[in-house]
Length: 447
Image (cartoon, rainbow, N blue to C red; front, side):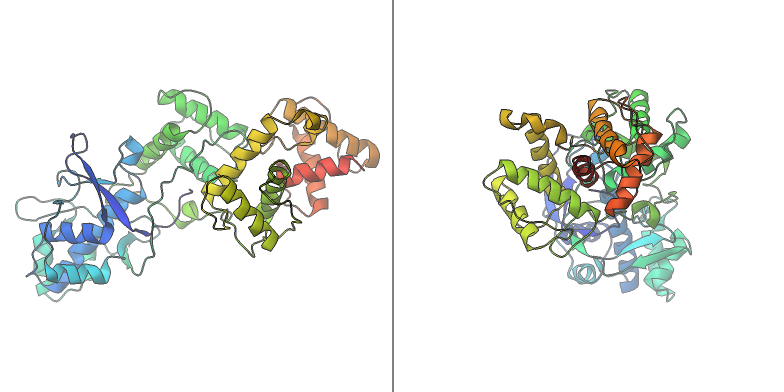
């Protein structure tokens, strides 16, 4: 899934030892994790406002680790360790103090944030007696609370006047950022936009990585070139495909250059994490992704008798939902009728499987099938030749598109012609050929 604003995870995976130590992982409810940490690190006899300040720091510290996938981006299979030398003190099956437990119940879905940023603050701290640090002093919070300072005032004393507390944050499952399938030339979505943002920021520290000028949701030639250079620098297979290993290496380097896990982090802005398009679709939705969904579902239903081939419109109607549920049942997915990232991945995988093995009697229509990837300027190959042949038929008949040369290169002339046809069809004029644009071009070529 794409980067988004933080939520409180239902659970957290704790490694019972140092990061490289051979120790077991346990999954515990996030609220119980915070109660455990707080009961191990502070005293229930402290003033309430001191306890609240410490708990908020502990929550923000843990959320920063989870949100930025600090350990998972390094190849570990946990969210945080129990070793206070690296993270926070946690004891398996450790007892909770009732006073602390009640306070955590009240504020566990809150965290600290710096103004202009969205990620939970890396709220570093130390006990203030045996050790000192740039962050919060646990014993110092007691002194400040006894002086009458409230939790926000205590936290600002240590972390600066530009921090605030976000309250009543939604609680959701902790979903990994990797979309679940490789991103490559022709992919699209918010994850692609996030990938471009991260690569461009990394390129400031590694200038050999070329800047990606088009910051949209399409994985184009510029993106592929930047990925290849990144892979070369960091000793990954140089194929331009962002699989899980490349995705998390990019995320790890991005976190590093922005100092995300640091009290003085460069931070993430709302603009960086705000999704461009809503890729989770359900009954009543409309927009460009509905046309894409409808095209792919219709082709799949044509070749799969378990999925009804129903009349679909530009909105997610009852027929769309019925087909989605049938697809989910046919491919062992939960029949929710909602198209999320997992369902999108499954639909694309099934569609590509169909066009890779078209039954012989349908081979005469082979050129008409959407190739399964978004075509954009700079892409070359047989798919572009097919597209240009359809455009040429339209051009010869109507002469109202700029023109086309069948050269197998998605050039500026091809892009201009595509934009004209997208405008005519009421589609977004991106110049990028997805399923809806492809279908319209093919149908227009037959007139």
